[in-house]
Structure formats: C-alpha cells, structure tokens
Image (cartoon, rainbow, N blue to C red; front, side, top):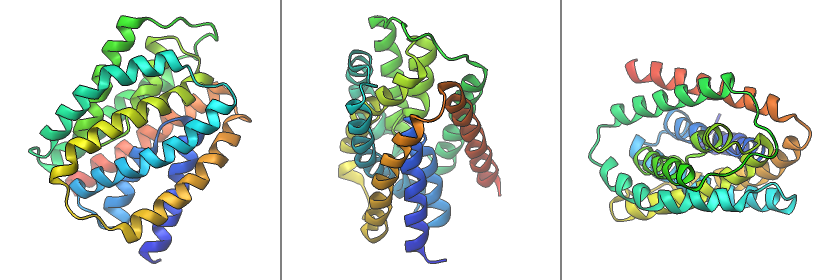
Length: 247
C-alpha cells in the first residue's frame, strides 16, 4: 500500500475521531505519521498540530451549528493554556524522542482509564472559573510539550472537572484544541524541519471530510457509548506506542 493511500485512510480516521469524539486526532495522527508514513517524532508532532488545527475548525463549525459548544468553558480553557503551550513547545525540542513517546503513552493511559471509569455528567453541570483555568493551563503544557491538540485530556477534564455533559464536551474540546495547537505550533515554527506536504495535504483533505461524518455519527450514538469508545481507543493506542518504543 502506497504512502499516499495510507495518508488518505489515516486522515479519514482522524476526522471521524475529532468529529464524533471531539478528541483523538493527535493520538491517531502522531503514530500514523511515524509508523505508517516514516516521519520522525519531531516532524510527526509538528505536522499533527497542522492537521489537527484544520480538522478541528471543521468539526467545531459542525458542532456549533447544533448548539453543542459551551463557549465560556472552552474559552476559559483556551485562554489559560496559551502561554503554557508556547513555553512547553519550545522546551520539547530539547527532550529525547523516546521520552516524548513514553510520556505521550502514559498520559493517554491515565485519560483512558478515567474516561472508562467515569459516569457521564448531568446536563446542567456548572462551570467553575478557577478550576477551568487550572485545568486549561495543564492542558496547554501537555499540548506544547507533546505536540498534541489536547482533546484526549480536554474531554475528560470538561466532563469530570467541570461537569460539562459529554454531548457538549465533545464540541467544546475542539475550541480548546484549536487554541492550544496554534500556540504550540507558533512556538515550534522557528525550529521546525521541512515537512512532507505531499502527504500532509491529502491527510488533511480526508480528515476534513471525515470530521463531518463524525459529527453525524455523534448525533446517533449515546454520550455513555462515546465515552467508553474514547477510553478504549486511548488505551489501545497508548499500549501500541509504549510497546513500539522498546522494540
């Protein structure tokens, strides 16, 4: 199977994840770029930010049209995470690739377990400003350091820390992803190696299309089911990355 076909297939999967779960884009994109398309870890984490930003904008528009975005919670998260994301993005260039991969896998395991154990939140959850700011700053650091959009941690935080219902957390997390990823990408811009746009652009194209399909899927599946699927996906990807680091 050619690299172009693999890029198209991986992009479609990323779009489905972001559109339906509001997360999962980076945890699929980074391994796909490294293990399927031959990117280095540094190239993959930077390229994933570009891919996830474009795809998340598409998915956010779809969720906003149906009123499934909690703008106040999302903006609090995003604002608090901008500076930490930029600072951590600059720091990540000095960390060995294997350590970044293991840290990525460990965080995915923690988030996945929490999602599998957590019950869906009530629809009338209240948003706490200080808690949103603290969680947002932490998510920003993770985004900048590991080159991820942050949705795989934003969704659990919105659900469990701020009591945002899963149906709204999916759309709201996309706003957080976009802001954090933009800040992290800006911090990496001066040191970024040349990226293979011949593979990145087809990846983005099918991801954007998949995001619309993912939004339609989220309207047909219960929040509890989405939560379980998301948690299981995190654990599977984390296991594969952890094992791959030692092989």
